[in-house]
Image 1 (tube, helix red, strand yellow):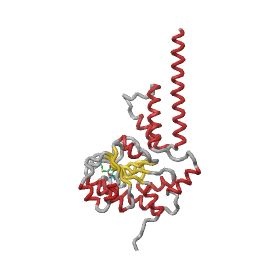
Image 2 (cartoon, protein in one colour; image 1 turned 120 degrees about the horizontal axis):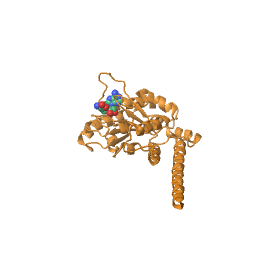
Image 3 (tube, helix red, strand yellow; image 1 turned 120 degrees about the vertical axis):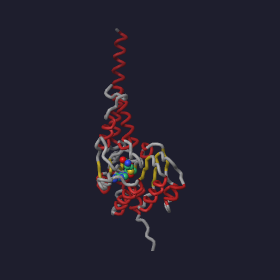
Image 4 (cartoon, helix red, strand yellow; image 1 turned 90 degrees about the vertical axis):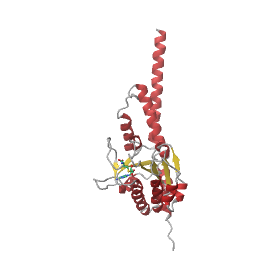
Length: 273
Ligand code: SAH
């Protein structure tokens, strides 16, 4: 008898997006789609692929054409992950600014501790240069497949396969429906406002911060240095909830109002003099 996917496993895997950034070789896109489908993942997002749609991608996808047909094509990583509450970036090497780093199997621990952190995206970089620093800074965690230290870099589709396999193991272990859509509703109802903020909400807060910091003279956009990266890392580590984002934005708005009020009274006074 043909086996079917259990419902909790399927519901969990539906919450995971695989995002490929600026893939150069369409064959890798097809092979990644195939790797996803074998592990029960469906949701593929392509950020600015070099060559797509493509015959080669279709050929390499084998029987996973449905994953390719339903793939979203977008123009930035920010757009790809806007609705996600957890973003994990894959990287084969250490970067200049250390970031919270996990091994593939630790994705389970993250989700056990943060059951509201879905939908989740797992992001893969270019064949030549991997992910850009700005892209890595949009991620809450970086994940590294602990490969041979003398030869760390897997083929893109092979890396997708390894990560999707870990997601599948995780899905198969879903005894309860905690991470399923129904389970999530219960958690959210219990902790109203305590749901993790989406990338769009957190980026909105970051932009707001940058605006106010520029206004006060604390930040010079012409000489940003590491400040934007460090702030992004702070937000990634804090994994703010929706309620916390709202508090911070409310505070920033009150600061802007206060600064405007102060400069208005100062102007009024100097006009009187
Ligand atoms: N030369 C590139 C490697 C790109 S490999 C670099 O220096 O970064 C293409 C993509 O496959 C990477 O961006 C990453 O998403 C994934 N990948 C390859 N090897 C990996 C590893 N050991 N751990 C995690 N991801 C890996």
